Length: 150
Length: 150
DNA sequence: CCATATGGTTAGCTAGGCTAACGAAACGCC
DNA sequence: GGCGTTTCGTTAGCCTAGCTAACCATATGG
Image (cartoon, rainbow over all chains, first blue to last red; front, side, top):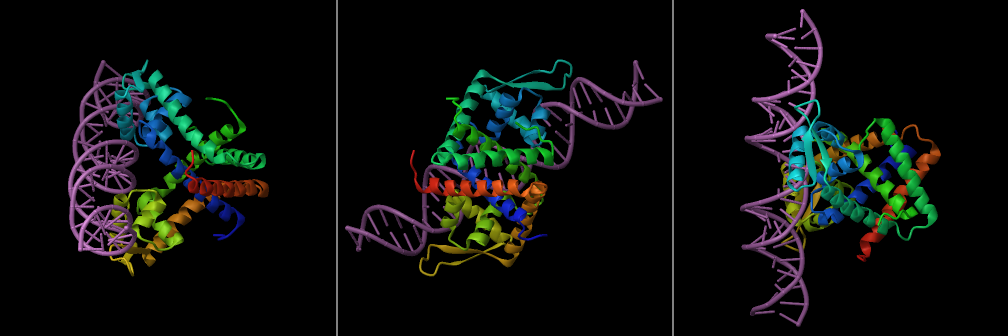
């Protein structure tokens, strides 16, 4: 493969930057009252709308038994509600409770606040570059495979 | 909260893009013969040079018992070697074996290949934006680490 | 020389991932 | 209508990866 093409160097730097950013954010999540997997699943229900367990598992790219356990914990904590599917008696429909929405909003604010504080001090041009890069990335990811997550 | 300054909107998009990129890469790592934490620790030794266990733990931002177990597994698999520290009898120096380097190179090639294939099709200008954004991010993360403010 | 700090390990807990196996319901097709 | 197959969700059991607490051995500074 073209060992040091512009594309491969960019890929390398992008990869590294994304890893380091998320690693930093992980330390912020320590204060969250639920773990990252539960938070992420809850986030899908809040921002992406209610859906069944297997749909949620697919969105989160985990196996259904994994999601079953996550949802069980979220329900125990009163963050998610399940109601029967109108036509399919095997299935359930999951939706966030008011408590779940509030908790998610707090966690999200913490994360975003952390990113914001890092960006503080950048000039308009640098912010523009970061914003544009994010858009390019999202577009490329969508194109590479229709994801539909979050 | 919920104000929408340019900074906060950029933070939001950046956050989302990084999550989606790494989620995609996670599916590539399924083929890796060792888990992500071990792979990452090995990567530090290969690209960042040999160091002690506690230094490696600090680099990876995990507690020393966690790193102790990771290193134990890497050593069992013949991917990492430990030798005594020249002056400090409590400490050890960790370095990757040839096997470790080869394994890491394969895993890294898979990941980067995946990112590269996503970037294929972008024009020079878009690549430039992504590369520049990565540099800004890395710089900001480095800066933010040194000052433990806020 | 002793108190304290540091490097690493062990034990034990939690969260989050997986597969295999299962029951119940839905679907498809005679 | 019945029967095989697929799908939805759960349970059981295993693995990785994170943590703290407690510990031993060695360094280091008064």
